[in-house]
Amino acid sequence: MNQAVSPRQLAPSLPPEVDGIAVASTTLANVFKAARIPCNDGSLIFGHLQLPEYQRPYRWGEEQLARLLEDLRAFFSDDAPPHDFYLGSIILHQEGGNARERGWLNIIDGQQRITTLALIHYLQHGDKGAPELTYNSPESHVRIQRNLRWLEQQQLPKVDFSRINVTLVVTRHEDDAYRFFETQNTSGVRLAGADIVKAYHLRSVPNMAQDNFARAWERMRDLKSLVATFMKSRHWQTLRWRDVASDRDPVFERKQIVTELAERTLPHGGDIAYRRLQVHRDAWGTEAHIAQVGYGMRQPLGAGVNTMRYVEYFHGLRQTLLDVGEHPAMGSFGYYYKRLGIDARGSVFLTRAFDCALLMYASQFGCSRLLEAGLWIFRMVFALRLINDISVREDGVQTHIRNNPLLDWISTSHTHDELMEYLRAYRYSASARNLDANSIKQRFARSVSGTLGFELPWPEAEQIATIYDVELCAAIDRICLADAARQGGK
Image (cartoon, rainbow, N blue to C red; front, side):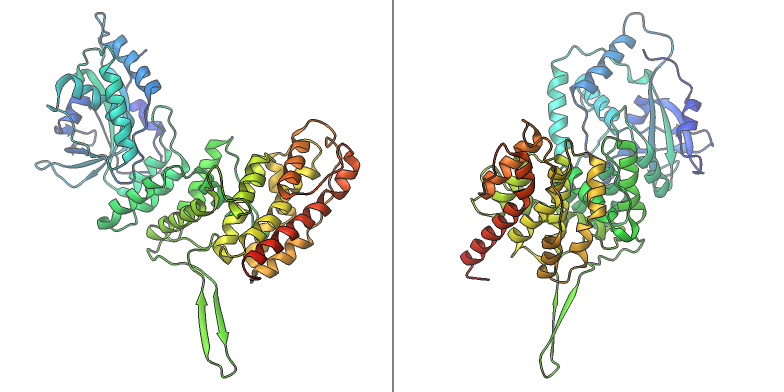
């Protein structure tokens, strides 16, 4: 039930280190029509609402709309309470303008509520008195059209927007605006780490290019898996190991992502790719330089364009390598990746580590020998499924990679062949437990042997545990030799 709330109750939720903020209590009608609104410090808020480029898309669905409508119906009824309907706080960054001329009020927190109420306002009053907001995200366009159709089918209460009270918290400094954006929630829909990273870096992109970078980011859609890959590659380093937060602890995970991919990035605006350079010299000392393309997964990142292009590069690489479709060509890297890394169902945690290693390998050595590297990396990563008696836990995968620093092997190897020496030298002992039961472990071993074409003496668990890796290595060698022959011995 909506109750009367003092605007001052908002103050403790704001970052205490921020000075120079202004607070105002007003109606949503005043906000929508860009009226002059007096603040607690004697200044005026005077401007049109605007969505900054770093805002995430509009994502409210039927559940959030239904909850808001229920509150509005209860309030705007025959026995309406004497106090106004309190919508909560809206955090704004005032850009330009003065007491005589309107500026822009960038919405930092409150977009979901404002957009939804703007849709209701449009259905009841048309364009008159509605805010003129521009949405650049295709996802926002789809959601707005869908929600508008849904609202048209509902019995809407007669909403008096002059009786909807909001607390406006206004800052005139962009850094403070970003800090608010990072720390606030919107009616229970928490910002993802990737949303914060986007917001942070768009601030450092030149104004003329911000729209292009924002659109490019939105085209990448869901970045959760890719961001998780970045975190593994950058945290799982022997010399400065850091455990990666679990997605079951979203608050800590989000904080870790923002720290690594936003706050710790270098303040310069240059777009630098840190890559290795091969220098070839002939007998007369003439040099030829061959540089790797793209970005290094563990490289230092700069604020703005550099980090955004880094994300875009690895997003494209991930799509090319790992989005293999339902029926990749038999014998291809995509075929074995799907059959072994996904269909065999060894463990979602192992698959995530596998994906990270594959992207790091491809970014460093290219794809000409990806099949060979992928099979040997698969053996090393998914060995944990055979080592463990029963389950594969998320923290167990971190320990597995820490004890067998696969990502360091990849990043420190100068050549593909040097990496193969590390991978071939890896040894482990498989456990026979649960290989004779109808278990995930048994089904995984059966799937792997079937895909790679080697026989196991079912149901003799002890024998299987003894020969599994021997047969696996032999099968990998056969497949790699056949692939080399198809490529003319290269």
